Length: 75
Image 1 (cartoon, rainbow, N blue to C red):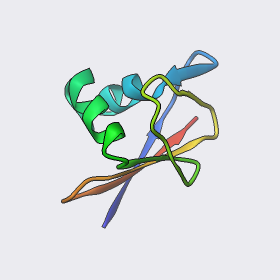
Image 2: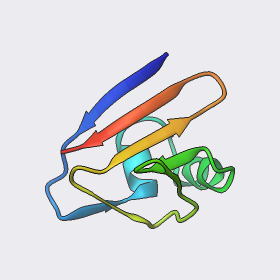
Image 3: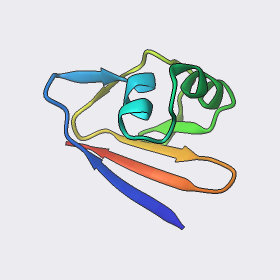
Image 4: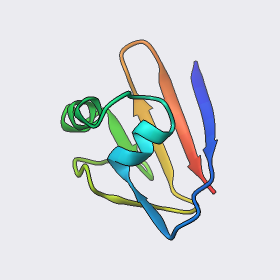
């Protein structure tokens, strides 16, 4: 089952690792780095391998962990 999260950002963008922490999917930047490196994160349906990738409004981030799947909609 996929959990839907809607995140509102004030600036033009947020870095992918910070978004994962802000959304509560991971607790630390180290955890974010690991799941990004293991190709568990997609940005607009493409695997993303860059921790500092800029995520902008209307982007969709999908995180596919072993036990849960998240879709983050950026507003």
